[in-house]
Image (tube, rainbow, N blue to C red; front, side, top):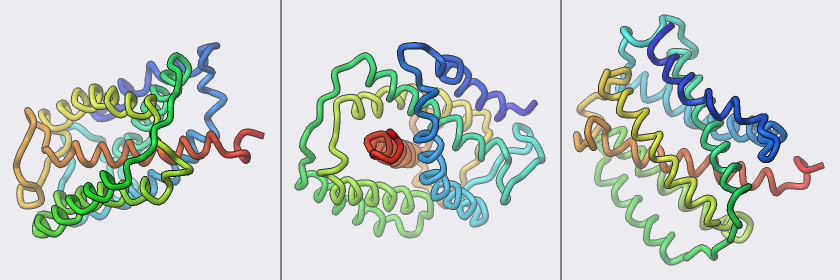
Length: 226
């Protein structure tokens, strides 16, 4: 069993077991969970495949198996299942125990953020990964701006984002310190928090935000609540 597979198991084991907990009953939300995993995952997996082909990063053969899917270790594909499943479980758990309140989205703040990330994407155009995560942040803010009335920002969503960065730092520390994932120095700024490239924080934020936005819309839809 590869180290990366063990990391995937560590990520999902508790949320998976607790999915059958009687109060939360996360298991009932699986249609929305899997649809979220597919719709968001297809874009980030495509990004992963492209970045691997371009050499932005590579996978240490010492910590992954030789089995690949579309050029990626199968453990990497599993990562796009275990992580969002766990994040959405955290979100649903917080929704159950907290009174959810919706806040109006500050359009000027979103527009300012979009300008900043658009500028950063262009400024770091020669650094593939850095430029791409800035573009991802720009897209997330644009979607939030366009779907503001439908989507909204809640206290539960914001807390989920903050809480999610705790396991993110732990998992990414192991991925980058062993290292399981090796970054090409010409694709990043080289700025790191411990061993984690600063770009990963923006990557994670954009991906977690996308999962939460799509999932939130799905569980509110009449189609999945029939």
